Length: 227
Image (cartoon, rainbow, N blue to C red; front, side, top):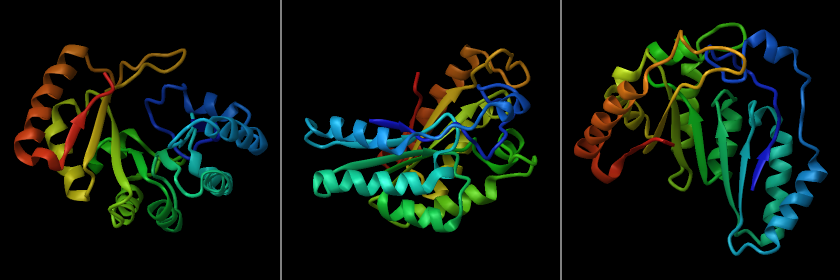
């Protein structure tokens, strides 16, 4: 079951599919009603042998850590500690939050576009500052626990489509063992021409990079795409 925690975000990615930063910021902040979420979890858990909870959002779920922690404890109480947890995040949270995730979440996917030279151009903070240093710190914290599977999700644009092999090495060196890449989406009501890459280029580069990952790392690294 996926819990969409909030539509609020602490980043201003230049290609965000939700549209221009100013438009996004004008939308009213929404946070899930925790009692509604608990009822949904209870109904879902009632006939699942190994229930799984994913904390997700069209914003950044860790902005509401109190909700995540309460729903985590509630879910654990329903199943006598046999539930399974996943988090999809932009990685922009404190070291303290990273430590909690490391100790409690089974699968974490961090949105990161690869090496700082690309990531910090495409994925910036609300004030336009680079974010890779925070992500690298948090990834290194979370991979300390082998039971916490840390993966990355990268948006492929014209700025990194030819750098996919470098991205594989970069994430492997950070301790990430799974990387999924997806072609950039056009934002709502707009165009992604500043970042767009054609499908054939994406596919050709992806296939070559995937074989590179297999040849170099074998079972120690998986490179895939949601396509």
